[in-house]
Amino acid sequence: MEEGIGMDFFNQYDILIKTLFIYTVFGLSMQVVLRSGVFSLAAAGFWGVSAYVTAILVKQFPELAWFVFLAGPLASLVLSAVLALFLRRLNGLYLGMATIAFSLLVVAVAQNWTSVTGGALGLYSIPPLMTIPIGLLITIVCIGLVALFHSRAAGRFADAMSVDEPLARSQGVDTVRLRLVTFMFSAFLGAISGAMHSLTFGTLGPNDSGFALIVLGLTIVVIGGSASWVGAVIGAVVVTLLPQVLTFMDEWRDLVYGLVVVVMIVFAPTGILGLVEKARAAWRKRGQGRRGPRAAPPSSDQQLTLEGTAR
Image (cartoon, rainbow, N blue to C red; front, side):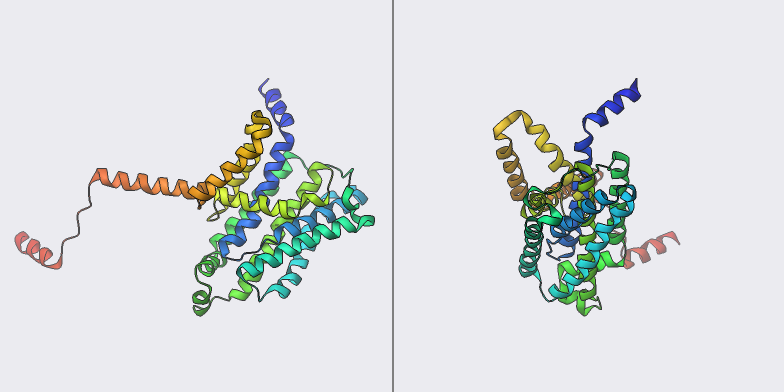
């Protein structure tokens, strides 16, 4: 009986759960670069590249679906290395604008290359091969890769680069190489999210990527927090579930959703993760206050006096 109830739940919310996985991986792709201080929004463009490569190939070779799944992310990885060489001198707002232009260029190609991408109508009848267990496995692997990246030297160097890049460079950090690795890693994660989308919804159009997707990724990171992969997961959960919670508001739903996002940006710029960390720090401080101040260790004169008394 319980097994049947569980299966009914997953069947009822199948698309919602898979959407959560897609948003989580895409949120990770944005969190990686923003935490490192590399203001790149190219993940949305590589999302589109991978989604189309996956959709086109899986329609041609459905029996090789999971080999095809890797084709989009790998193609995006190679393309990201080429793009990074062209953009290596850009930083900050200039890099952000250039990567937005790249993402919009991908949309333009998808709209106009009708013979391959289906043009404005997009692609249909893509085999929806993504299952909840496979989506969960892919998401866990991506989270593990990001956590590993942040826990190793590259992650610590990326944190240092985000605080002060010239200082990090003066301390021997190869910031050029690190920016390249971070850019490509973000592109790879974004591409995985795009491939997951194609194999989940069975349709793909130019409007699925582009500026709307950039806003979605930034919203996930802003709401959850960019300090850790945990923030990307929290943000993805909120962005996925909040519209469902607000369905009872009908035409007011988008307005309330927008207000929630604005309130989070204004009053919690470090995201929900930042609020949790502040609450934990306040609780720790309160607990120390209850126990009273810790006694200071005796000075050298006091130690000599105590030793003399003991004798």
